[in-house]
Length: 106
Length: 120
Image (cartoon, rainbow over all chains, first blue to last red; front, side, top):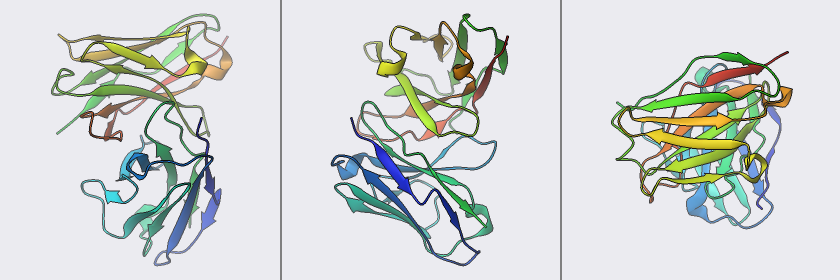
């Protein structure tokens, strides 16, 4: 069973900065199955990136995903105020594990 | 516009059962699966199970097997998730989330969540 470990747990940055979030898998994950979600307080998660690097509809191009094998990265090129949230990586496929999340704070 | 509308918050006693609904706009016959994901207060996301309308297939996470049932009513386009023998640890927000087609390996739309509080 794949375990996803995200780092850092909390990332403190300023608007305009670049954010790099990491997701490490305990076993190889096929790139097509690696997904990123964004969750803001009091809201349901929102799909950001699927298939490692494909932005979902309506997601700004400052968000990008990369990686392969066991190491995946979500990059936010220049932080906007609305980007401060919790980000989860996820492997599509039973048992559909999620990472524990990275909190991106101002 | 796609909407997944869930039932409202509830308070349950330990040992009782809960049943959360998820109404899918556009119908459930045209989608691949509805998944259930929960989130305990201040915690991360945990997959519980899914319903695949084509064949009425139910898969559930090992942690929940024997305690969870997922069913659907195609006439009302609603998927239900029942969790039995509740404990305090089942206090959480419960989300439904859609997978549109078998070629889509992600949850593209989520319900607003249903807060279930287990309290004596």
